[in-house]
Length: 169
Image (cartoon, rainbow, N blue to C red; front, side):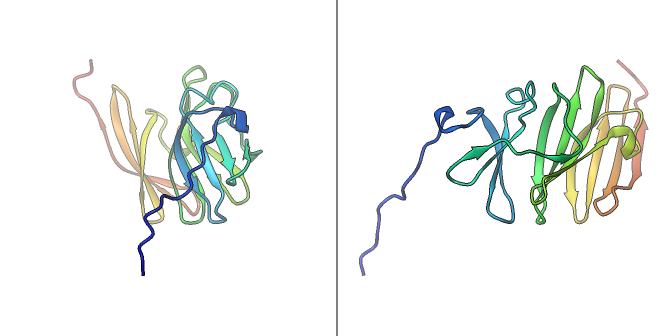
């Protein structure tokens, strides 16, 4: 039997194919096989086009249900759960808002939790990492930091560690 060394067919897509941008920083595939493309941070923020869906033929800006990002919000997608929920951090420097978002790709439901909703009123959230059915959240500023655990079932959080810096800049 002869080995097939031919290259697979590769397709190229650009703005003329209906994409709203040509800069994407992350790609996620939902449980149904649909691709979710995350726009680069400063590309989609002005018009609130943070995600594009792509079925292999047609790109679309998805209509989301539930909460909504405000114009000018910067979105940093971190990861996707096995159930198809994209999560990450959002920030809005003009409105001084910061927190987490959860986008269920199957029903297109967007849930936004501000830092204050997560239990930290002093520091903005800067990082989140998965740990089983929880997220480990890092809140930090020039004044100090706090680590919290967020339960993904009910979105309750508890403080794990907090410290104010003794010598502030």
